[in-house]
Length: 294
Image (cartoon, rainbow, N blue to C red; front, side, top):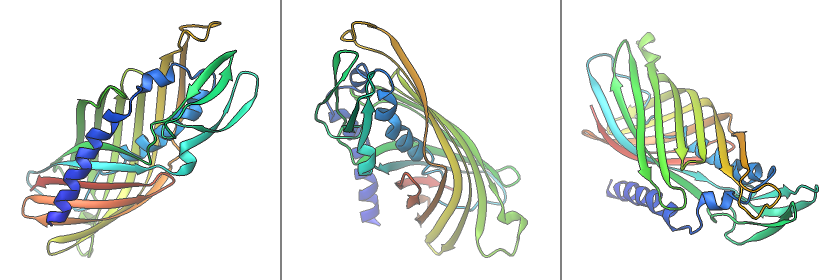
């Protein structure tokens, strides 16, 4: 149990520290991304953040039958960045291709390409895992239905700036309609909106079915779900693009994740709940969290 507690603490510290040591800010890097280069550079961010936000939404499928109950916790969620997500093929205004250009998660070394006669230097933050911290509040219940909330505002360093998150949804008991069911079942519907600095916003949605089974202090849980995320970016190009200085670039990206399967385990220590799970999807994530609840 002590090991799990230490893992939770270390992951949460890592989520807060990693973004603050990466040097050049996201806004400064985007100022050079003209044309369609920005979409290739930011696509992995849409995939990773969308998958992160749709993780850590539950640690059990059980919804109590009656009375007031609550859960307050925090989840450390990490998206595992593959090598394919660290590079992309950039195309300039003349149709020339540049292969193995770093994405936002790619190597922290300048890759120079020419766009509209100006040199564009692209480099990433050299990450193989992208973490976030997500608080979670659950209050129930009305007719086997719980209300779920996520709200946070914090500064994640000069690289990314202000991070804000607002999410809400419901979880409804399915097993209440099957009194003899040996397992607990529920479904979850959740939507979220976040902003990273003043230039990137992401909206997500998730719908899934969960099942769990408790054995004394140990509970095994899992679920399947469908999901999606949409990233919107808007920024101003730097003055080195002399033919169109201060031009505003804006675009939208959809995440590649569409379905997911997850499996996990929760330890119940009186009011304290410690849990961990792994999510299988095109964008893989893992979750470690802790909280208190009745």
